[in-house]
Image (cartoon, rainbow, N blue to C red; front, side):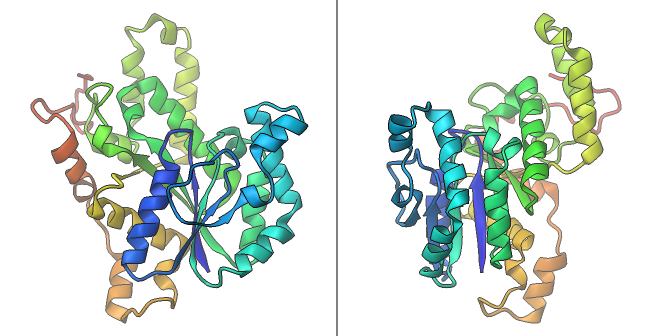
Length: 305
């Protein structure tokens, strides 16, 4: 049994992704079930096959345990961790459908709190083959400091959850809504030489105070060399297909027996490579201002525009 654990900060588009991906996979012939594990998600646009609200509600926790929204979410995840038998029984009712888990947006649940990690670890013991799909709003690429924060958060999440991991820049149709990118898009998707980002802080007195700290964070991210991104616009089939292929490789669905596959298509998907330009060209052509090209990181002398 295969599935995706959809995570990311508030507003990154997790619920929209679950709706779009469930419709997209259903159109391809997969039987899909969407599981809402976000106690704060009251208005669900998708058909919810399993809802954590049947076990615990954030509103009730805040009222009776006297916790705020963040503390209440942590309590709900800990409560779910203590009641995994309930989750197992409800999942068994779904049969062998492809699962999409819609999780809360509280970042600390994935960076240092243990409940979500323990929950997905138990799901893996039950032979659910999962991949974490980490959504990040693409407009953070327009701000160097925010992009470094996003990279560090993504890295921390990857190390904490211990799952196959796919990082996704969501809402790519709005990628330059907060300003033109300083570098070509592949700089952000492939996470190339991050020392160039530090050049962005030269004229910012506030960040110059923490120049050594930013340099140290960049070194940590580069030394692990784990973070890269796929681009996504949920409204475009080509974009959804591209993300689906990456996810299917990550959780092993491409090697499963749930759909008819011939050996040639299987091996092609397993070892085939897609050039980076092919992966980002739609976003570049449709949603970015190409009148003046951003700086190419391959240039010998590089100065951010």
